[in-house]
Amino acid sequence: MSQLNYHHLRYFWAVAREGNLTRAAERLHVSQSALSTQVRQLEQQVGQPLFVRAARSMRLTEAGRVALDYAESIFSAGDELMAVLQRSGRPERQVLRIGAVATLSRNFQENFLRPLLDRDDVELVLQSGSSQELLARLRVHALDLILTNRRVQPTADDPWRCRRIARQPVSLVGKPRSNRQAFRFPDDLGEVPLLLPGPDNDIRAAFDRMCDELGVRCRVRAEVDDMALLRLLARDSDGVALVPSVVVQDELRSGRLAEYLAVPELFETFYALTVPRRFAAPILQSLLERSEEEILGLEH
Figure 1 (cartoon, helix red, strand yellow):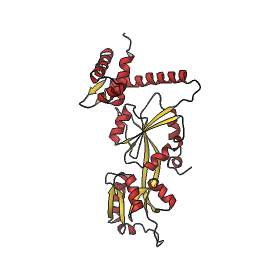
Figure 2 (cartoon, one colour):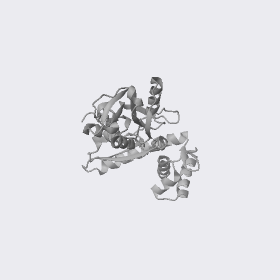
Figure 3 (cartoon, one colour):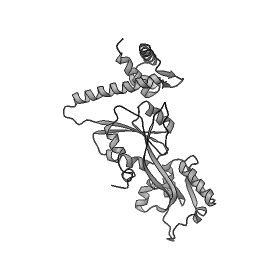
Figure 4 (cartoon, helix red, strand yellow):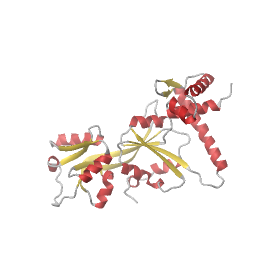
C-alpha cells in the first residue's frame, strides 16, 4: 500500500473547506490548475473521486466526506501538537467561527456571545448570510456554529445537529401610550398601524393565521425582513411593531418603547446548528450549556 501524500491531503482539505477551487487557490497562493492537479493526484492515489465538480463549486462525494473527516482530525491534531510545543507558558488562544442568518436579531447575537467578548484568549470570526450560504460553510467546517431561528432537519448527506437554545414570546411594542390605557387585544389590532416582519418570516405567518382565526383585519404600515430596521422603525415612528422583545431590549429598558403585550401563543425559537466533529472547539459547549435566560440576556 502506498503512503498517503499529506501535501495532497492538505490541498484537498483546503478545497473541501472552501467548497470552491478559486477561493482555495487564492488562500493557498497557488494557481487553480496546480491545485486541481494536486487534488486529482490524491484521488488517483486513493482510487475514488472525492468531489463532484460543478461549474462554480466542488461538492464532496461520500468518499470525500470520509476523507475530510480524517483530514480534520489529522490537521487539528497537528495544530494541537504545535500549540503544545510552542506554548512556552503562554495561554492558548482559541478561534471560534460563528455564522448567523442575516435577519437574526443583532441583540440576540450579542447576548449569545457576551461571555466571550472580553476574553483575550478567544478570537471570534463572525459571519452573516442566508441559510444556504451558511450551511455550505458549515458543511466544510469553515464555521463551527450557525445561529438561526428556523429548525433544520438532518439528512443522510448532511447530519446537521440542530439544538434549540432559547425561546421567547413575541410582543407588540410601540411608543408609551400617553392615555395610559392598556392595549386591548385583539380589539386594538385593527386600529393601529402595524410594523410586521416580512411574509416569509415564521412569526409573521403565525400572526396572520391568528388574525384570520380572530377575524381581525390589520392596518399594515410596513413589512420589514430585517429585524434591525424593524427596531428603528418602531423607535422612530408611531407604528406598533410585532417583534421578540430581545430585538428592542435597549429601548424597553430606557422607556423609549413600551411592551403593550406578549401575543398569546406566539414565540420565536432560536437554534444552534453544528456538524459532528472529532475536535470541536471546547469553548463552544460552554456557550450552548447556558440557560435560556442567560442566552437571551435576561441575567447579567
